[in-house]
Structure formats: C-alpha cells, structure tokens
Length: 366
Ligand SMILES: NC(=O)c1ccc[n+]([C@@H]2O[C@H](COP(=O)([O-])OP(=O)(O)OC[C@H]3O[C@@H](n4cnc5c(N)ncnc54)[C@H](O)[C@@H]3O)[C@@H](O)[C@H]2O)c1
Image (cartoon, rainbow, N blue to C red; front, top):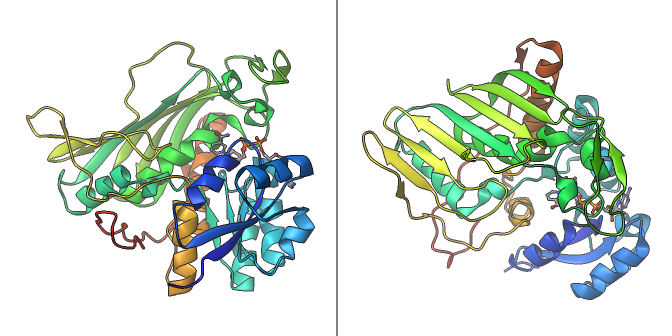
C-alpha cells in the first residue's frame, strides 16, 4: 500500500474535529499539520488530535509534506484561500459553500486547470452508505423513472448552538448557501444537473441573538434572506419542491428528502450525515426499510480520501469542484429567482461519476 497523502488543515474551528477524527478512518490520508489565524487554537487542536505541527498559514502552504490542503475557514475565505493553496502548488479541498459568487468560484476552477491541480469540496455526505445505496437503486431502475421529489430543511437558526454564528447571517451565509449543499448534492448525484429554478424567499427576523458560548446574548443583524421556497427542475425531467429555512421555530413533520419514481418512492435519511434509514414504498405498498448495499464507516473526510485515492489512481474524484460549482450555481439561482420573481436557467453542468461500488466494508472502498 502506498504512503498516505499528506493533508494540511487551514481553519481549526467548530467543524474541524470531525475532519481530524474522520481522517483517521481512511488509510489514504494523514493529517500532518494544521493552521489557523488563531495560532493557540491550531496548537490546541494539534495536541488534542496528535498532529505533529501547528504552524502559520504561510508555513503550511510551504510544507513539502502537504499534498492536499483542507480549507475549513468561513465562507468568505473559501475561494481566496483555495487560490492561495493552488498558487502554492497543492490540491485544494474546502468546506461548503464553494465560493460567495460565481466569478470567484470560476477563478478557482480555472486556476486549478491552469496549474494541473485538483479542487474538491464538501459536502461528501452523498458518499454515505445509505445515499450511495439510493443512487444504486435509482441507477438500477428500482423505483422506475424518477420524476419528482422533495427537499426540506427547516430549523430556528444555527445561533441556538453555534458559538460564533454571525457568518450564517452575512454574505455567503443564509439557509440556502449553508444547508442546501447537502440536499442539492444528493439530488444532483441521483438526477444529474439541475436546469432551472423558480423561488420565493423572505427574511422573517431582522436580528438574531447568540444563545451559547462566550458571545451569548450578542446581537447579529441579519443580511440574508432566511426562508426560501424553490421549485427545481433537473435534466432527467424530475421536479423537486424544496424549503430551506432558518425561521421555523417549532417542530415540523416534513421529510428530509423524497424521490418519486414511476414504480415507487424512496425516502432518504438526513443528507447532512452518514446514517439513517433508507426506505422504499413500491406502488400500492407501505414504506419498508432497505438494507444498505454499501457498508462502510462514514464520516466527513470520505470525499478527501476519495480525492487522495483518485490522485494516486489517475481517475476523477467524486466530491469535485465541478459538481460543487454546479450546486453553488443552483443555490445562487434559488436566491436570484426569489429576488427577481423570474425563473432562472442554470448554465453550469458536471460529469456524473459512478457510485462507490457495493461493499461489505472489508475491501478497499475506492
Ligand atoms: N460548524 C459546523 O457544524 C459545520 C458543519 C458543516 C460545515 N461547516 C462549514 O465549515 C466552515 C467552517 O465552519 P466552522 O463552524 O468551523 O466555523 P468557525 O468560525 O468555528 O471556524 C473557522 C476557523 O477558521 C479560521 N479562519 C478564518 N479565516 C481564516 C484565514 N484566512 N486563515 C486561517 N484561518 C482562518 C478561524 O480563525 C476559525 O478558527 C464553514 O464554511 C461552514 O459552513 C460547518
């Protein structure tokens, strides 16, 4: 087996432990160094997760042991840091959203092409066992021809739990850019590219209050629309009804993701996770749980491991920049359509890559 690909992490905040831990599940990758604007935080993560070095961003980018840089900064820094990573001659993999506008997203893709380097992006949850099993069932025609679906995310807002939630309500934040990536990446993986969107959106609260941590009680002024309702059409002919909201205060009974086919329906588990029941209801029958045909331990970092394996094997990686850009373009279309009141056509597309092969978890995954 070849040596694991060296990973450097920039951004050691709230989400980083999931990657520090997740990376240890995959023999393809090893986190060798981490960095943050807050050097103390980087040092404490290095100690907690037994990472050899915590350094400055410049030192990390110059480190010869680092082949892929994982960018876990906040959204406004995703594209600028991705560009610095590529300029430093390393492959870039970042958290979602891919960018804050189309121009900077395109610039990242073009720079990677020019440099002969790769770009990857979260979410990689569409590579989970249940969601890859769903892809296999759709590919095999298990529910006939898919013609529709639903995607619902509704919560009272991340300020209830996140210690530093301001970015969710500023440029690059909001429920569409923050939560739709999970839903729209799964739908793109099942249906192919989206082709058009028509949406309506509003801001229900002008101000939010941080509910926990050292900033508890601080006010955030809301600069994004926080309740978006969209109808999305896909290239395979399927139409999806979606709600992405930070404004729903109480409980709701909306399913997270449903796919309707000519011979039955699929109910998918939370696309922001790696587990949960995958259910099918064939024509005239009730819901039944389907066993996963891909059984591997999942955690954020599977997309990164697939990128590392793909670099070694000379094939395309699944959680790639082209797919992330398309999902990002679709999300911007949801916001733009809501503002203009017009249907927005989606220009971007991506190449659909094969599902991860069915596996009992014993054989190598990729
Ligand atoms: N928190 C979650 O549960 C969660 C879940 C999924 C995805 N994400 C995504 O992960 C990203 C990070 O979220 P988070 O919750 O960890 O945010 P966070 O604010 O907790 O952490 C971000 C870290 O990045 C550092 N940073 C920012 N700009 C930097 C720069 N230019 N150079 C070096 N370091 C820099 C900050 O100092 C901070 O420590 C966001 O895009 C978010 O959407 C977060």
